[in-house]
Image (cartoon, rainbow, N blue to C red):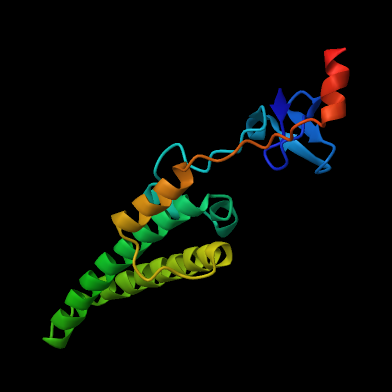
Length: 169
């Protein structure tokens, strides 16, 4: 039986790719439909890449919280590497090297870009979980994955005794 991922009610096919849940009063995409009251899996199919981090804010908002945490980890790493490179250029320029001025300007633009990406990701995550993780380690992500994989109870409501008796007749 095709069911709603939110309430577990049976859904009706409306148009070729959309279902309707009369309890929630919403249209659902075919890929969101569950079977027999199961809950939707929150684990992503694959880990995001640095290209995913470059997506627009609107696109980032569509990612799961776990994907956003991975993206933030990547963005923070990228920002740190750019900061370190920029620091080297600044130190060289303090020693009198003038050939690094353009590289320093470019690295600043990149540093600003990645800092703003971190701000975006941090704020989306903050809206979802209520805080900004100070450090995202593999252990932190693994703990979240473990929690997401904990078994959940299907959304099935037992029939009343009277309805069960009617079904027996």
